[in-house]
Image (cartoon, rainbow, N blue to C red; front, side, top):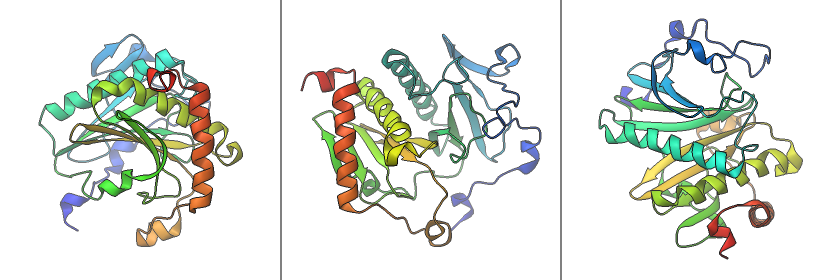
Length: 267
């Protein structure tokens, strides 16, 4: 592994970084909008700005605040609000990609105490990596799996070869013009993860975005304590086919019951 495969964490830059995921009474800079600095763009109550705590060397770290509501989340947004968020985050992510300034541009979201995040307030992170290819170790087969739903424009499946494991949901659209369908499938999937998945015992998830030619991929990952097989050996694990089939059946039912988009209503 070369140095171009490693992100360097600058611990000095993390001093004073606020945290309120584990300590709910902690200060929230995203609620204190009057004192936000280095704002790149704003659309209604969504704000894209530079990350004040630049903890990674050779990167451009930005944050996109999704809402003025500190306790909101994808799982609680209306369909309309969620679509506004997904359209805006895609525009900002694509703008950084099209700038050609970076080796790669990552976009992801942390939610919950096991997600790796520090702030409860809903936000995405968009990171431009100067040297590192953030997608080097991601393979096309990480986005294939047991079908939940598939049409000419969108697919929802459960990974047969997850990046980390155990259950990873992949929402794949064939073109960015179907971002409204992706947003609604993601909203229902996140709600399923927090409310229904394994009896609703999960309180954390991550979302990751990828581009493959014209395809846009959104991976929703329920989070738990990471397996030592992955930490020590990079061995991912997945649930057995019978269990995954049951998960797929319930999630499809949730889509049919709750998804508010033409993709489902036209079927």
